[in-house]
Length: 169
Image 1 (cartoon, helix red, strand yellow):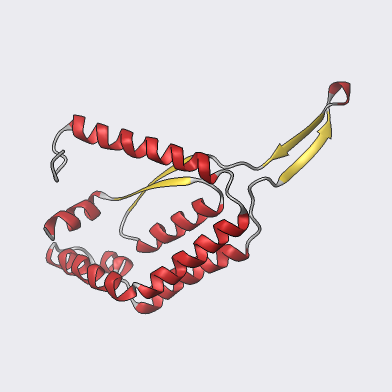
Image 2 (cartoon, one colour):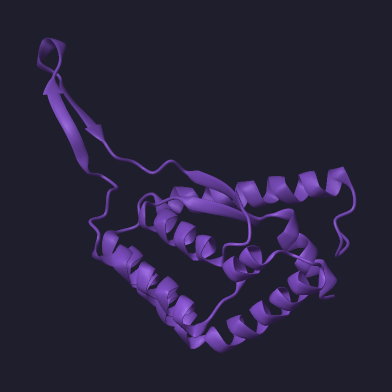
């Protein structure tokens, strides 16, 4: 497959493979213990902070490309990262650790016909797909929330994200 996905068939194949990998990951994540999920979330936060210089350098390239392409000021502000914003992203992941794991929580229960116990229990959805635009915090927030709830997530930036990426090559 070429670097540039030029045909519908290539894009379809790539998306199918991505979806299958996400579905396999979701099956594993559904049974992940809370303490392991929390350790991963903490590690994600630590990695964001440790890699903030790299993240900021890459973001500066995207911001410059957006400016050259005449994007409006509000758009550029939304996509511009700072050390404080990256720290806020990491703090958001740490805040998820403090939340009770919803997976397996019994919402309600009752006795049905013939004395059968029925319970309504929270379970992961499986795979969540999300398309969003010029909001780097969404990447971290969505990944963290989906991970905490035992779901795999496929994140796709808008067509602008693809344009920014291809213009840096």
